[in-house]
Amino acid sequence: MKYFEDQEIGVLITFNSQYDVTEEEIIEIGNRFDSQPFHTDPVAAKESIFGGLVASSVHIFAMFVAISDRDGENKSAAVSALGFSNMQMRASVRAGDTLYSRYKVTNKRLSNSRPDMGIVEVSSEMFNQNDEVVFVASNAYLCKCRDAC
Image (cartoon, rainbow, N blue to C red; front, side, top):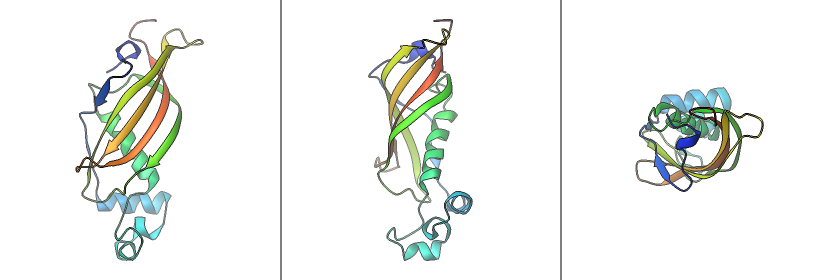
């Protein structure tokens, strides 16, 4: 677990966990949250601009969060997300892909209103098994201090 004090500006951290994408999950998430045929129907998806089934943006974001949440060593002691910006889907995510991500702390400061927490800003990237960037985002979050800062 990485507390506020452990977050070093400029250091690139690769999460130890990965995410295996399945066709069943792409279809399930597509049916629940984004029912475009290229997310829900493998036959129709072949006729789309993607040429096959692809994960929706909400699914991609959820997998991105899951990767960081599963890594006990590099997981942040985050209390709450404060906001995301510059979210970009750079490449399609498909069944059979194995995703991993990394982040770099770009800024941090102690919280003015919460003396036991700090605000951490990061820039993140998620890759597929071919090291192709599929998703990027910047975000800020409230992070616990190990001891009262």
